[in-house]
Image 1: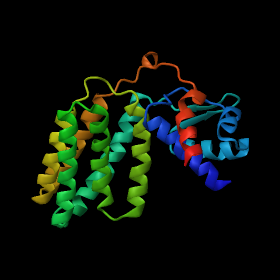
Image 2: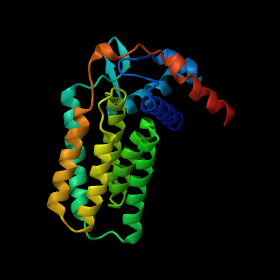
Image 3: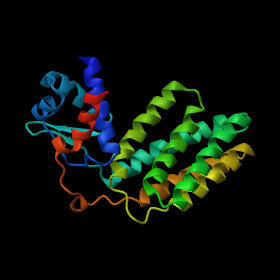
Length: 230
């Protein structure tokens, strides 16, 4: 049961990240059981896992819903990301080899290309990838797991990103952060990480009335079809 429930939770997570399942969408156990052709017990395990990640809210006598993050929750999520990444920055500064710095700069180059091509979705994905790569280089599996859980929660927030999101400014931060770390300027790098995440938070709109209604069956149909062809 665990293996199939993990697969289902990953599919639902992907649907949230790709903005097909939006905050507030009802996730009926029976509907999901019908969609994935499994028992409700398997679905329940998947929903419990998603609720532990903060992606799903389970309400007594009402069922499960894609979580609706508040502005306060957004601030707390990015505060936690700041704390983790500041610690990683202190660890990595002056310790990465040439290959490590090159990998980070490659992320910046790809993000810059996406921005030039006005591909905001790819720029957003690469932006998150930069932070994930930075943390991965710490080689601390516990920190990576904590960071990955927070990144999954930002998937909900990215569903609500506003048009004033400054990708160019965030890209400049990434490039500057690499320079500071390579020069061993830890305090300045840590301050930049804090400013960077504060800028991201300010780019979100969290008004409920901006969210269109979504249907779980319709939203998950492409993922189920892909499963059938694999």
